[in-house]
Amino acid sequence: MAWICKKKWVLVSSLVLAVTLFLVLMNYLEKPYLRLQPMLPYGFRSHWISSWQIKAVRAHPGYVSVPKREPLKLSCDVCSVVSSSGQVLGRGAGTEIDGAACVWRMNNAPTLRYERDVGNRTNLRVVSHTSVPLLLHKPQHFFGPASNGTVYVVWGPRRNMSPDGKGLIYNMLRRAADDFPSARIYVTTDERMDYCDKVFKKETGRDRITSGSYLSTGWFTLILAMDMCKEIRVYGMINDTYCKSEGYRKVPYHYYEAGSRDECAEYILHESAPYGGHRFITEKTVFAKWAKKHPIKFFHPEWQLS
Ligand SMILES: *[C@@H]1O[C@H](CO)[C@@H](O)[C@H](O)[C@H]1NC(C)=O
Ligand SMILES: *[C@@H]1O[C@H](CO)[C@@H](O)[C@H](O)[C@H]1NC(C)=O
Ligand SMILES: *[C@@H]1O[C@H](CO)[C@@H](O)[C@H](O)[C@H]1NC(C)=O
Image (cartoon, rainbow, N blue to C red):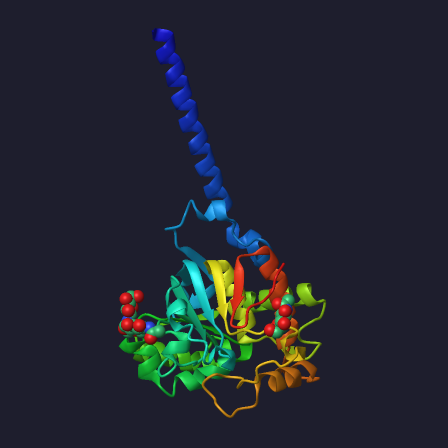
């Protein structure tokens, strides 16, 4: 009898030891995550790790609050990422988009009057420094109580975003944070901006600056989403060959700007601009590559990835 009890005890205690060791190891692996992870698209968190910490909210030091510079804490299961492209018009995806744990939008893309196609919830907006003045046209709407806890993540170059009083856009955000203390405004750190450039170079072999291009808000959005979302569902983003395909849909570049230059014309213009263009098409080639390794899916139009 005694030896059975002893055996049981050994079994139980070794089990406890094994679990403890596992947890310690996980914890150890977790801490330097953000350091080991600078090449995050390649270290997209794997399923079994995230299942251990579904409730844990990750603090990301690459994005800091205005003005306190506290790291962004966020974690989502499924994220709907809604493109600002006219592709979303008439697809009626609003309910499906709103069904995700988190709904992400870009810049000042409205939901009012477009709910059927784009949904009506907004948890996060990734905003270009150039779009900040547009948000400040409707400060109550974007930053007041009506914004309902929406998180803003603003990206931009040092000269505009510097918190030392010389950054024009940073100063605007700082004033907005003063006027609306409950607004959740974050900026991308210099290190994170450099990191996003590095990813571009690694993926395309081209230096962003010497090749005369600017990264798009879509680029920053996908990089952030890969860090914060377990699964990403992108709505209304075209693939890299779309504009060469037979009978493609001619839609406005932004769904909320009817009559603006059409999307493909805008893309082609940017792709070939010797200086100051967004390389939208090149970026889509990279997204397709990421989507083969990570849980990213594209809808309206759908991408064939296999
Ligand atoms: C938008 O919000 C209301 C509730 O506030 C909801 O009933 C409606 O179905 C939502 N979705 C869409 C796609 O309009
Ligand atoms: C505001 O946020 C809460 C909690 O996320 C949500 O339940 C509610 O539907 C939101 N209201 C609007 C108008 O978006
Ligand atoms: C890209 O989009 C075009 C037009 O929708 C489609 O015909 C083609 O299959 C797509 N390619 C990929 C790789 O998704």
